[in-house]
Length: 143
Image (cartoon, rainbow, N blue to C red; front, side, top):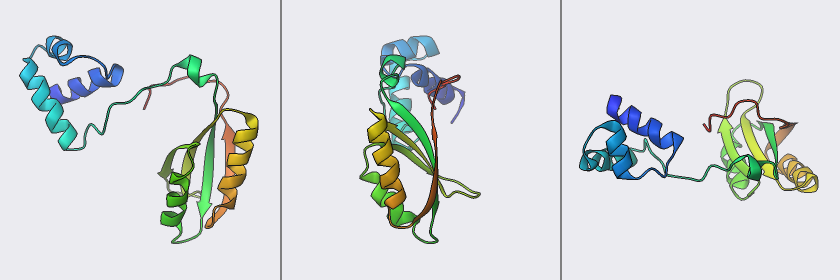
């Protein structure tokens, strides 16, 4: 990625709905250049997709939690496959250290969150879990 690509990705990170014409104007390049760059960034996997980022109003109606999971050796693939079927699991990343996976979980109610945490603990291959309920967002760069 060169400077133009980085600037293009930065603009899209701030607002993925910007039209190609606006991107071209802000970057001081031709629309065809922006479109070619977008096509290349998408085909190379730099841009994996365009999505909706929920605002504070929508987030306020969801309970969020981070869940740290310790997995039996060689069971990670099976555990991740099971997690894919749970719509409350928004994100799962592998990590080093005491825990093997870090999950971001969302639920509409405390009951749903409680059930989700129980379900996570019951997944075959999960040795232990620790959860932290999110309270107030202090910094959110959307990453």
